[in-house]
Length: 338
Image (cartoon, rainbow, N blue to C red; front, side, top):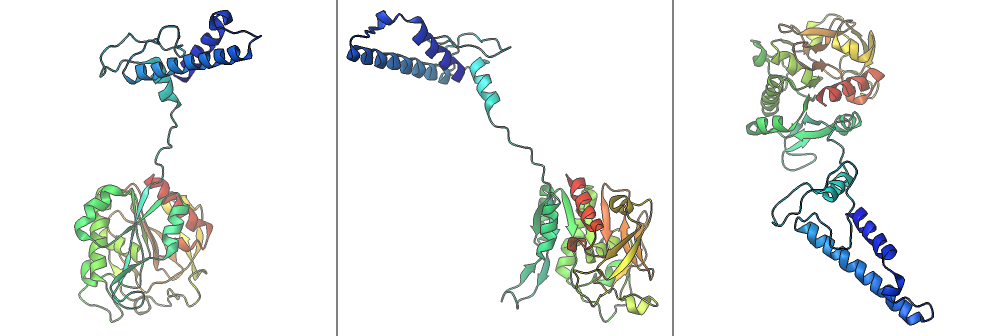
């Protein structure tokens, strides 16, 4: 339409004889009146064009030509208001509308920790360290925090493209992997575990990318048919300090990465420096599960299942970005979700 109006304006000022419009260089007032009439004529034509296009007409008013865009044939005159033929000017305007970029950030669900009343709030509250969400966002994902609403698991799964099962200062109930005894150090959070088991099972069933971190890796191993060491110092001879005494922002020990695994492909390393904050670990793994990383004392530090689109668990905390491999793990996970 903009091009048509410009063409019409040019026609008015070019094709009309100045004497017909009353231009007289000797009379300034007549010259001014002439200019006003020209502008008034142009305004009337523009108003008529708007009305005609609003009601579906494709023909320009008399005396004004609307130039069709390149390679577009003008449609027939339309009399009915509700008819919608292909209009050259409308098509050209549509092509000028700004195109929004596609939604490329996948929604990544992050399971929350839960605490009883006290400390932060006098009522029970959820918790999550900022670096979980921050590193997922930096890797290109959209972090979505998941309260423990077991009745809403399917709704969550409908809205996320990937799942991170986070860690926490608690343990998986030994009864869930068939243990007949329970170590005195075991501390559970039953509501959280119930929710995480449901949403993890649903994510695997839908083949959504899943990343298990620390306790999330342990739960993943149980969900895939494995068992856990309930307390490393009691079951592993000459065990490393898997609950490292130095800050979590520093490495605690190294892990060996198995060649030919997804983890090795992602990190490109045979060895990674990692932080360590756990007293339990994967013991036996389920059918099809691959151990992709071990500590120097033999403790399993990572698992994966090649039968799924992206199913990876690590015993350390890559959200601290201790090594370049940590960032690559998070980036590969988000890319799989995208």
